[in-house]
Length: 208
Image (tube, rainbow, N blue to C red; front, side, top):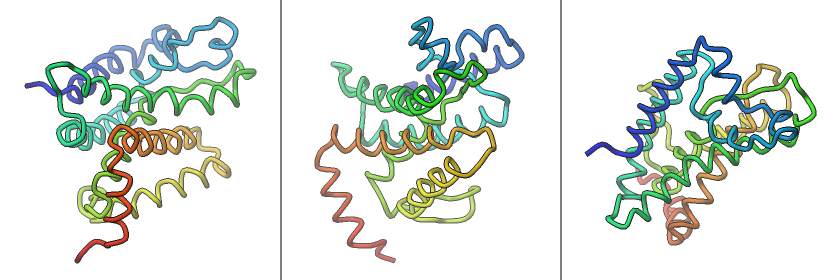
């Protein structure tokens, strides 16, 4: 059975590839805070997550989503006949895209030259849903270097905050940060026992 994660990955890849060289198509979907404010095109908070700057940007986001999303969907948000749990998973991912776009909107809604795109906020949300579920499970950086997820997550948050304050690399580090926080808090609220479980597992340590 095709998972929701795989459907999102496939859909995002098809749309991103189709519009990668289509400036008009991208322009209609990109997060452009000034246009959102002046023309009330709120849909851009969602559509910007379906387009990417280039193949590398797309490949990294979709590989990470595919890697973590299927695990989150299977263990935390399995599909039920009533569809409720599936809706929670969709809220986790697309909520991450929307919430992560809010800082950019607040900062740049007077700047007609600013635009943002990509699914990084939603992907960060899914990754941090895994971290709250299993904090000491290893995450393999570059597929080789084993790092406990909680340590990788802390490093990711610190790096994103620092880069947002100091870097000028045209990457939405605050989107990564807010998407990650959304994923952690949303998953904890939707599965409230996970907060105490996360604290207990964190204090117990990795058990090596």
